[in-house]
Length: 142
Image (cartoon, rainbow, N blue to C red; front, side, top):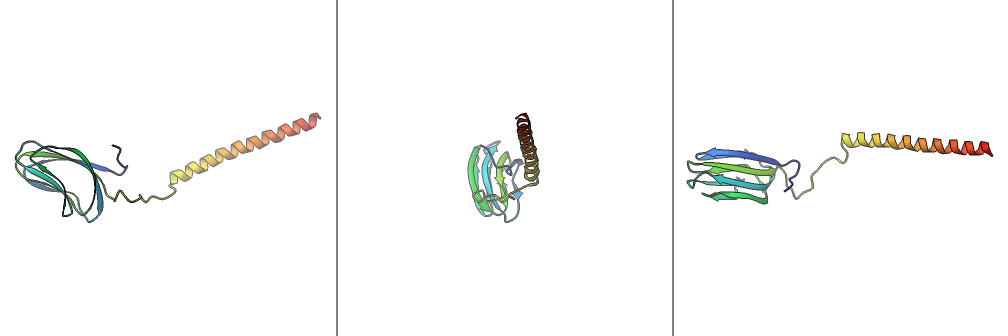
């Protein structure tokens, strides 16, 4: 899977009962994928986005799932029990269904365009200069 360039992937190891805030605020996020691995069967883990449950792991391993879930609010990892768990989550801090707002031109595009324009102008000037000299030579020979 190819993720967007602004995708964030976090790997978190948690031991014992914990509540971890991965992201805070009321921003819109798109969760692209989640995996939860448990050391034993003594705990449950869940991911919440705002008040909405994104995924819950019932004392088992949850393989990496591509979910593309759009949500608003804090991104929270809740873990119960005394064993260890590992979370892998990939998300972007925007609604992935909306177009990404970027400027039409960046400084790199402008510099590249000027450089290509100069190369074109040198080639055009060389072509005109060569053609005029050839016409001049042909005219003198007649």
